Length: 128
Image (cartoon, rainbow, N blue to C red; front, side, top):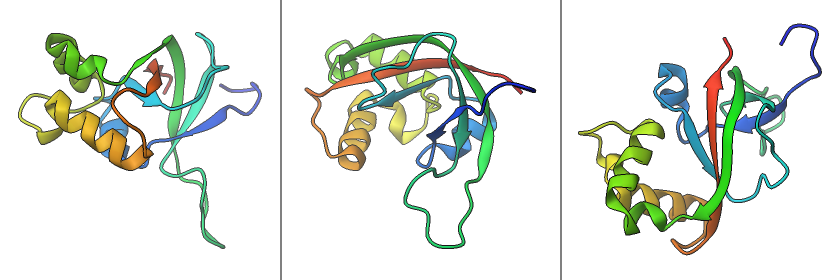
């Protein structure tokens, strides 16, 4: 990204470990409606709600490789898909959030939404 415009920040507050471990290549967001394939983003621990004196902690640059809107409940309606997606979200077999129902519950609890909510599924690659 040298010489490029400053990339938009994207928070990975709930999945910082997965981002750092590079086991996460998909993320879900409630909005991000104008994002396009090829857009470059800067992954951060926390981007908003910083207290006075707190700084944004950058995790690394990513590039969007696929984007689509879908109901969150697709992960529980289509279990094979759900298990594949939880792994791409950085929750491998054996992790409690590997179960699609647990992932959907975590997402809904943190984002204050329901399984019927249409979310933006963002697939990405690491640039560094």
